[in-house]
Length: 347
Image 1 (cartoon, rainbow, N blue to C red):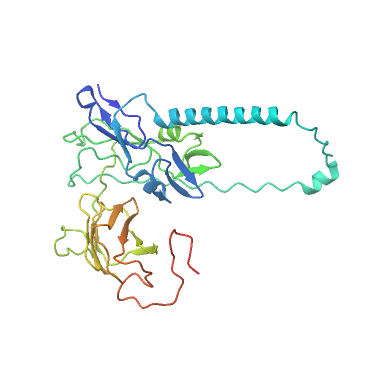
Image 2 (cartoon, rainbow, N blue to C red):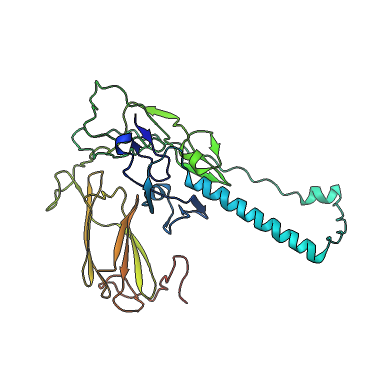
Protein backbone atom coordinates (compact mmCIF):
# COMPACT_ATOMS: atom_id res chain seq x y z
CA UNK A 1 0.00 0.00 0.00
CA UNK A 2 1.39 3.41 -0.99
CA UNK A 3 2.11 5.88 1.82
CA UNK A 4 3.02 9.57 1.65
CA UNK A 5 6.29 10.86 3.11
CA UNK A 6 5.76 13.61 5.71
CA UNK A 7 9.20 15.19 5.37
CA UNK A 8 8.95 18.86 4.35
CA UNK A 9 9.88 19.36 0.71
CA UNK A 10 9.42 15.68 -0.19
CA UNK A 11 5.77 14.60 0.02
CA UNK A 12 6.31 11.65 -2.35
CA UNK A 13 4.37 8.42 -2.16
CA UNK A 14 6.32 5.22 -1.47
CA UNK A 15 5.73 1.54 -0.82
CA UNK A 16 7.70 -1.14 1.01
CA UNK A 17 9.46 -1.92 -2.27
CA UNK A 18 10.96 1.56 -2.65
CA UNK A 19 11.01 2.68 0.99
CA UNK A 20 14.84 2.83 0.90
CA UNK A 21 14.91 5.34 -1.97
CA UNK A 22 16.65 8.63 -1.27
CA UNK A 23 14.33 11.20 0.36
CA UNK A 24 15.27 14.84 -0.35
CA UNK A 25 13.75 17.23 2.20
CA UNK A 26 14.22 20.29 4.45
CA UNK A 27 15.05 19.31 8.07
CA UNK A 28 14.47 22.83 9.42
CA UNK A 29 11.20 24.77 9.78
CA UNK A 30 10.10 27.45 7.27
CA UNK A 31 11.00 31.11 7.86
CA UNK A 32 8.75 34.01 6.83
CA UNK A 33 10.19 37.43 7.68
CA UNK A 34 9.40 40.88 6.20
CA UNK A 35 8.08 39.41 2.96
CA UNK A 36 10.98 36.99 2.49
CA UNK A 37 10.40 33.25 2.52
CA UNK A 38 12.82 30.35 3.01
CA UNK A 39 13.93 27.48 5.26
CA UNK A 40 15.99 27.81 8.43
CA UNK A 41 18.22 24.92 7.31
CA UNK A 42 19.50 26.61 4.12
CA UNK A 43 20.18 30.12 2.78
CA UNK A 44 17.92 30.81 -0.25
CA UNK A 45 15.34 33.54 0.41
CA UNK A 46 12.60 34.39 -2.10
CA UNK A 47 9.60 36.72 -2.29
CA UNK A 48 6.75 34.69 -3.81
CA UNK A 49 5.16 31.54 -2.46
CA UNK A 50 5.70 29.70 -5.77
CA UNK A 51 9.45 30.37 -5.57
CA UNK A 52 9.46 29.22 -1.94
CA UNK A 53 7.83 25.91 -2.88
CA UNK A 54 10.46 25.36 -5.60
CA UNK A 55 13.51 25.78 -3.32
CA UNK A 56 15.60 22.62 -3.70
CA UNK A 57 15.78 20.40 -0.56
CA UNK A 58 19.10 20.63 1.29
CA UNK A 59 19.18 17.25 3.10
CA UNK A 60 18.76 13.57 2.22
CA UNK A 61 17.55 10.59 4.17
CA UNK A 62 14.83 7.93 4.13
CA UNK A 63 11.09 8.38 3.64
CA UNK A 64 8.93 8.45 6.76
CA UNK A 65 5.26 8.68 7.73
CA UNK A 66 5.78 9.66 11.38
CA UNK A 67 9.14 11.43 11.74
CA UNK A 68 8.79 15.23 11.72
CA UNK A 69 12.30 16.68 12.25
CA UNK A 70 11.21 20.35 12.52
CA UNK A 71 8.83 19.69 15.44
CA UNK A 72 11.28 17.42 17.28
CA UNK A 73 14.19 19.81 16.89
CA UNK A 74 12.08 22.82 17.81
CA UNK A 75 10.73 21.25 21.03
CA UNK A 76 14.17 20.05 22.07
CA UNK A 77 15.74 23.44 21.44
CA UNK A 78 12.96 25.19 23.36
CA UNK A 79 13.34 22.81 26.31
CA UNK A 80 17.12 23.37 26.42
CA UNK A 81 16.62 27.14 26.27
CA UNK A 82 14.05 27.07 29.11
CA UNK A 83 16.35 24.95 31.27
CA UNK A 84 19.29 27.30 30.67
CA UNK A 85 17.15 30.36 31.44
CA UNK A 86 15.86 28.82 34.68
CA UNK A 87 19.42 27.96 35.81
CA UNK A 88 20.64 31.48 35.05
CA UNK A 89 17.69 33.03 36.92
CA UNK A 90 18.35 30.87 40.01
CA UNK A 91 22.03 31.82 39.93
CA UNK A 92 21.18 35.53 39.88
CA UNK A 93 18.71 35.13 42.77
CA UNK A 94 21.37 33.41 44.89
CA UNK A 95 23.94 36.13 44.17
CA UNK A 96 21.81 39.24 44.57
CA UNK A 97 19.00 38.17 46.87
CA UNK A 98 15.29 38.95 46.45
CA UNK A 99 14.30 41.65 43.99
CA UNK A 100 13.48 45.15 45.29
CA UNK A 101 9.75 46.00 45.39
CA UNK A 102 8.57 48.18 42.51
CA UNK A 103 6.78 51.49 42.94
CA UNK A 104 3.11 51.18 41.92
CA UNK A 105 2.32 52.80 38.56
CA UNK A 106 -0.49 55.34 38.61
CA UNK A 107 -3.30 54.36 36.28
CA UNK A 108 -4.44 57.05 33.81
CA UNK A 109 -7.83 58.64 34.32
CA UNK A 110 -10.76 57.64 32.16
CA UNK A 111 -10.73 61.02 30.40
CA UNK A 112 -7.08 60.66 29.37
CA UNK A 113 -7.58 57.06 28.33
CA UNK A 114 -10.50 57.92 26.07
CA UNK A 115 -8.59 60.77 24.45
CA UNK A 116 -5.46 58.69 23.83
CA UNK A 117 -7.29 55.57 22.68
CA UNK A 118 -6.03 54.78 19.14
CA UNK A 119 -8.58 54.22 16.42
CA UNK A 120 -8.44 50.66 15.10
CA UNK A 121 -7.45 50.48 11.45
CA UNK A 122 -10.00 49.06 9.06
CA UNK A 123 -9.12 45.54 7.97
CA UNK A 124 -7.63 45.21 4.50
CA UNK A 125 -10.04 43.81 1.91
CA UNK A 126 -9.57 40.11 1.27
CA UNK A 127 -7.91 39.20 -1.98
CA UNK A 128 -10.41 37.99 -4.54
CA UNK A 129 -10.06 34.32 -5.40
CA UNK A 130 -9.34 33.61 -9.04
CA UNK A 131 -10.20 30.18 -10.38
CA UNK A 132 -7.69 28.89 -12.94
CA UNK A 133 -9.93 27.36 -15.59
CA UNK A 134 -7.26 25.35 -17.38
CA UNK A 135 -6.78 21.71 -18.33
CA UNK A 136 -3.87 19.62 -19.55
CA UNK A 137 -3.33 19.42 -23.28
CA UNK A 138 -3.72 15.72 -24.23
CA UNK A 139 -0.99 16.12 -26.87
CA UNK A 140 1.63 17.09 -24.27
CA UNK A 141 3.64 14.40 -22.50
CA UNK A 142 3.47 14.43 -18.70
CA UNK A 143 6.76 13.52 -16.94
CA UNK A 144 6.51 10.72 -14.41
CA UNK A 145 6.22 12.10 -10.87
CA UNK A 146 5.06 15.59 -11.97
CA UNK A 147 3.12 17.38 -9.20
CA UNK A 148 -0.24 19.06 -9.79
CA UNK A 149 0.23 22.81 -10.34
CA UNK A 150 -2.87 23.84 -8.39
CA UNK A 151 -2.24 25.12 -4.86
CA UNK A 152 -2.96 22.68 -2.06
CA UNK A 153 -3.39 19.59 -4.26
CA UNK A 154 0.13 18.01 -4.27
CA UNK A 155 -1.05 14.97 -6.28
CA UNK A 156 1.67 13.32 -8.42
CA UNK A 157 1.33 11.76 -11.86
CA UNK A 158 2.07 8.08 -12.40
CA UNK A 159 3.28 7.25 -15.88
CA UNK A 160 0.71 5.30 -17.88
CA UNK A 161 -2.30 6.40 -15.81
CA UNK A 162 -5.61 6.55 -17.68
CA UNK A 163 -6.67 10.20 -18.10
CA UNK A 164 -9.24 9.78 -20.85
CA UNK A 165 -12.68 11.36 -20.73
CA UNK A 166 -14.22 8.05 -19.63
CA UNK A 167 -11.70 7.50 -16.81
CA UNK A 168 -12.87 8.02 -13.20
CA UNK A 169 -12.58 11.53 -11.81
CA UNK A 170 -9.24 12.38 -10.21
CA UNK A 171 -10.91 14.77 -7.72
CA UNK A 172 -8.39 17.62 -7.75
CA UNK A 173 -9.09 19.38 -4.43
CA UNK A 174 -7.23 22.69 -4.47
CA UNK A 175 -7.23 26.38 -3.48
CA UNK A 176 -7.85 28.88 -6.31
CA UNK A 177 -6.92 31.80 -4.04
CA UNK A 178 -3.50 33.09 -2.97
CA UNK A 179 -1.67 32.13 0.26
CA UNK A 180 -2.06 34.63 3.13
CA UNK A 181 0.46 34.94 6.00
CA UNK A 182 -0.59 37.60 8.52
CA UNK A 183 0.54 38.05 12.14
CA UNK A 184 1.42 34.38 12.52
CA UNK A 185 -1.75 32.97 10.97
CA UNK A 186 -1.64 31.13 7.66
CA UNK A 187 -4.34 30.31 5.14
CA UNK A 188 -5.76 31.01 1.67
CA UNK A 189 -7.78 33.97 0.44
CA UNK A 190 -10.45 31.66 -1.02
CA UNK A 191 -11.55 30.13 2.30
CA UNK A 192 -11.80 31.10 5.99
CA UNK A 193 -9.65 28.49 7.71
CA UNK A 194 -6.49 29.83 9.42
CA UNK A 195 -3.75 27.85 11.19
CA UNK A 196 -0.51 28.69 13.03
CA UNK A 197 1.95 25.97 12.00
CA UNK A 198 3.30 25.65 8.46
CA UNK A 199 2.79 21.86 8.33
CA UNK A 200 -0.88 22.46 9.24
CA UNK A 201 -1.11 25.06 6.46
CA UNK A 202 0.20 22.52 3.93
CA UNK A 203 -2.55 20.11 5.02
CA UNK A 204 -5.51 22.52 4.67
CA UNK A 205 -8.04 20.70 2.52
CA UNK A 206 -8.82 22.28 -0.83
CA UNK A 207 -12.05 24.29 -0.96
CA UNK A 208 -12.64 23.78 -4.70
CA UNK A 209 -12.73 20.59 -6.73
CA UNK A 210 -12.09 19.73 -10.39
CA UNK A 211 -12.40 16.34 -12.12
CA UNK A 212 -8.82 16.44 -13.51
CA UNK A 213 -5.44 17.54 -12.13
CA UNK A 214 -3.30 20.19 -13.85
CA UNK A 215 0.19 18.76 -14.48
CA UNK A 216 1.48 20.54 -17.62
CA UNK A 217 -1.27 22.95 -18.67
CA UNK A 218 -2.35 23.75 -22.20
CA UNK A 219 -0.03 24.67 -25.05
CA UNK A 220 -0.61 28.29 -26.01
CA UNK A 221 -0.04 29.04 -29.70
CA UNK A 222 -1.12 32.59 -30.59
CA UNK A 223 -1.64 33.62 -34.20
CA UNK A 224 1.63 35.57 -34.30
CA UNK A 225 3.69 32.74 -32.78
CA UNK A 226 6.90 31.96 -34.64
CA UNK A 227 8.77 28.70 -34.93
CA UNK A 228 12.35 29.79 -34.26
CA UNK A 229 15.38 27.79 -35.31
CA UNK A 230 15.84 24.75 -33.08
CA UNK A 231 12.51 25.31 -31.30
CA UNK A 232 9.31 23.31 -31.29
CA UNK A 233 6.39 24.09 -33.56
CA UNK A 234 3.90 26.51 -32.02
CA UNK A 235 6.29 28.01 -29.45
CA UNK A 236 6.00 31.73 -28.86
CA UNK A 237 9.31 33.57 -29.04
CA UNK A 238 9.86 35.91 -26.09
CA UNK A 239 11.81 38.93 -27.32
CA UNK A 240 12.88 40.35 -23.96
CA UNK A 241 12.45 39.78 -20.23
CA UNK A 242 12.89 41.99 -17.19
CA UNK A 243 16.10 41.47 -15.23
CA UNK A 244 17.67 42.80 -12.04
CA UNK A 245 21.10 42.39 -10.48
CA UNK A 246 23.40 43.27 -7.58
CA UNK A 247 27.08 42.61 -6.94
CA UNK A 248 29.86 42.10 -4.42
CA UNK A 249 33.59 42.46 -5.02
CA UNK A 250 33.87 38.83 -6.19
CA UNK A 251 30.48 37.94 -7.70
CA UNK A 252 27.41 39.33 -9.42
CA UNK A 253 23.86 37.94 -9.04
CA UNK A 254 21.43 38.40 -11.95
CA UNK A 255 17.71 37.52 -11.95
CA UNK A 256 15.92 36.99 -15.28
CA UNK A 257 12.17 37.12 -14.62
CA UNK A 258 10.40 34.46 -16.70
CA UNK A 259 7.61 32.26 -15.31
CA UNK A 260 7.25 28.48 -15.69
CA UNK A 261 10.75 27.74 -17.00
CA UNK A 262 11.06 24.06 -17.95
CA UNK A 263 13.96 22.85 -15.78
CA UNK A 264 14.47 19.70 -17.83
CA UNK A 265 14.96 21.52 -21.14
CA UNK A 266 16.54 24.81 -20.03
CA UNK A 267 20.16 25.43 -21.09
CA UNK A 268 22.51 27.96 -19.45
CA UNK A 269 26.11 28.09 -20.76
CA UNK A 270 28.90 30.19 -19.23
CA UNK A 271 31.61 31.58 -21.51
CA UNK A 272 34.66 33.68 -20.64
CA UNK A 273 32.75 36.96 -21.05
CA UNK A 274 29.17 35.98 -21.89
CA UNK A 275 26.21 33.85 -20.80
CA UNK A 276 24.06 31.94 -23.32
CA UNK A 277 20.43 31.37 -22.33
CA UNK A 278 17.90 29.00 -23.91
CA UNK A 279 14.83 28.96 -21.68
CA UNK A 280 11.71 27.08 -22.86
CA UNK A 281 8.64 27.24 -20.62
CA UNK A 282 5.89 24.79 -19.85
CA UNK A 283 3.30 27.12 -21.45
CA UNK A 284 4.84 26.99 -24.96
CA UNK A 285 7.13 30.02 -24.81
CA UNK A 286 10.88 30.31 -25.35
CA UNK A 287 13.48 32.96 -24.50
CA UNK A 288 16.92 32.89 -26.17
CA UNK A 289 19.65 35.39 -25.44
CA UNK A 290 23.45 35.71 -25.45
CA UNK A 291 24.34 38.23 -22.73
CA UNK A 292 27.73 39.87 -23.37
CA UNK A 293 29.19 40.76 -19.97
CA UNK A 294 31.13 43.86 -18.91
CA UNK A 295 34.05 41.80 -17.60
CA UNK A 296 35.44 38.23 -17.64
CA UNK A 297 34.05 35.56 -15.30
CA UNK A 298 35.22 32.26 -13.81
CA UNK A 299 33.04 29.73 -15.63
CA UNK A 300 33.91 26.89 -13.22
CA UNK A 301 32.65 28.79 -10.17
CA UNK A 302 29.59 30.38 -11.79
CA UNK A 303 26.22 28.70 -11.20
CA UNK A 304 22.48 29.12 -11.72
CA UNK A 305 19.14 28.03 -10.25
CA UNK A 306 15.63 27.95 -11.76
CA UNK A 307 12.72 29.11 -9.58
CA UNK A 308 9.00 29.47 -10.14
CA UNK A 309 9.14 32.99 -11.60
CA UNK A 310 12.76 33.56 -12.57
CA UNK A 311 16.24 32.27 -13.44
CA UNK A 312 18.90 33.33 -10.94
CA UNK A 313 22.50 33.38 -12.20
CA UNK A 314 25.51 33.89 -9.91
CA UNK A 315 28.55 35.03 -11.91
CA UNK A 316 31.96 34.58 -10.25
CA UNK A 317 34.19 37.47 -11.32
CA UNK A 318 37.61 36.55 -12.72
CA UNK A 319 39.15 39.44 -10.75
CA UNK A 320 38.11 41.42 -7.70
CA UNK A 321 36.44 44.54 -9.07
CA UNK A 322 33.25 46.59 -9.27
CA UNK A 323 31.31 46.55 -12.54
CA UNK A 324 29.58 49.85 -13.44
CA UNK A 325 27.14 47.94 -15.73
CA UNK A 326 26.15 44.34 -16.41
CA UNK A 327 26.47 44.09 -20.20
CA UNK A 328 29.39 45.17 -22.33
CA UNK A 329 27.16 47.25 -24.64
CA UNK A 330 25.50 49.17 -21.77
CA UNK A 331 26.58 52.77 -21.30
CA UNK A 332 27.50 53.73 -17.71
CA UNK A 333 24.90 56.17 -16.38
CA UNK A 334 26.51 57.13 -13.08
CA UNK A 335 23.64 55.62 -11.07
CA UNK A 336 24.37 54.06 -7.68
CA UNK A 337 24.94 50.34 -8.13
CA UNK A 338 23.66 47.78 -5.64
CA UNK A 339 26.56 46.18 -3.82
CA UNK A 340 26.67 43.08 -1.58
CA UNK A 341 23.17 42.13 -0.45
CA UNK A 342 20.01 43.47 -2.06
CA UNK A 343 18.77 46.55 -0.28
CA UNK A 344 22.26 47.82 0.62
CA UNK A 345 24.04 50.24 -1.68
CA UNK A 346 27.55 51.62 -1.99
CA UNK A 347 27.84 55.33 -1.26
